[in-house]
Length: 231
Length: 233
Image (tube, rainbow over all chains, first blue to last red; front, side, top):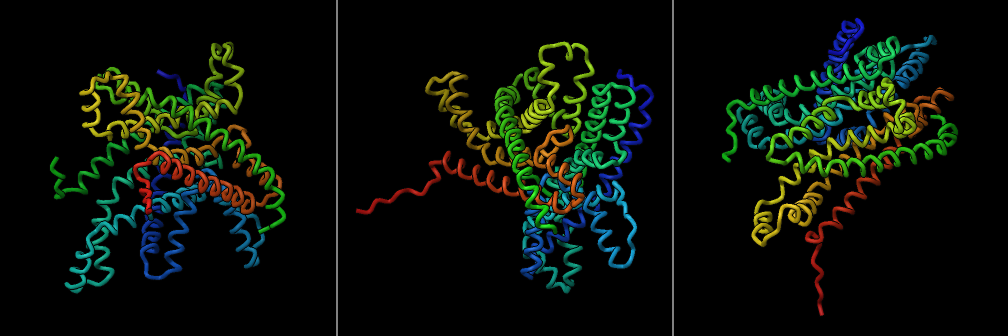
């Protein structure tokens, strides 16, 4: 097997940070995605523009550039706001916070398009029936629309999740001690770049394989009671 | 926003854009060349043939591009045999490392796209080709592959855009592509918003042009979808 020169525990610690970042960005991204989809489907034109502009713009930019802008831009933006309140010290944004915000922002842009499609895919009659039964708009959304959106959007969300997991590696460049950064550190100490980057690759492969297995299980569960098309 | 700062960085970013485009087109072309044989192997009924492209795809789609890039750029130098060999002058260059890694990376995705396209060619067309006596090579050359390329074109266009965005990682191995230039500019002027937003605008313009290029190609390759010319006279 590969000799990790005692860096195994550190690689695992880095993997834990990678997972935390993935989860945090996922939660933020899902919220932004739902908000974006709601904006796109809203009656108000400015809101629709905002939703469409968000996904069109972010999907056209390199993920790496977004991460860099969030990390370097956030402290400048925060300092500009803070100086209005008379606070003139330097504000440092943590790499984890900036990374979560950037990756969640990207995930949300793609997810909003996905959620929009899934919401439209649900027959209108169902919402109308719910309204006829006296449910409020909110009840209709949470009890009728959302559970089905989940089922329809799940395969697409799964793809986005896998992309997100791999994109966490980008945050290493702005200094977050996740798997890639820890690996680079070990490389600096041992001068064995191939060994360690290969070890990191294997860990990412395990993560993505487990995720894809879990997603298949989730898809099956979400589709309980849905007949598959007869072949 | 500092307008003068933006104007000052435009020439540098344009220069970076040239490198970005070079890397993207080179890897898109090399990736396609690699993907054709792999896709043919991937649809093979013989499991001993299809397992290799499967493993290749598993690796390149399951790991971050950054890891792949570092494996090639930093990793290969670990071996004395590589450093002593004739390929070292090439593998020592960040430029070629990026080009090679991007090609291998995108080849994995294009293989899957082509596999889907090959399988989407109607069975009847292949049966017809067999019925008029074509052998396997002829069928691939004149029926399956031309059809598959047409079917795959929109997805290949998506992959091209993804590759454009992924190419920003070239800046992590010292290359001065659009992102690399933006980082250099930022290190000098400390204006993150101006530097990165202007770089973003470059990417958006390139994305826009590429999308239309693919759409034009798609129209060109699908004469059957053209409006019929009606001659009234």
